Image (cartoon, rainbow, N blue to C red):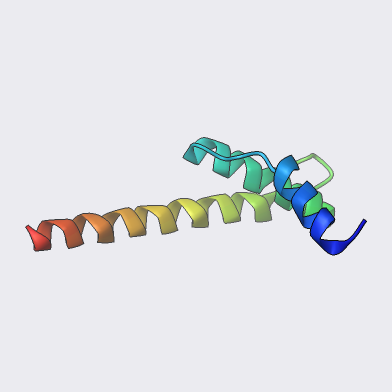
Length: 74
């Protein structure tokens, strides 16, 4: 299997994210899979939680900037 075939298979297997909740869930799963060392003995993942909070902050910031831009253009 060549590189091109591998990339095509990845695209086919990738699940399309349609909502913010799905995006957040997918990112959380990916972080857990890529960084098992971040998971505490009790199953909690404080670093993952920090990433979740930061994502929410960034999205809120972009939404706010977008609203300001739209209102200034009107």
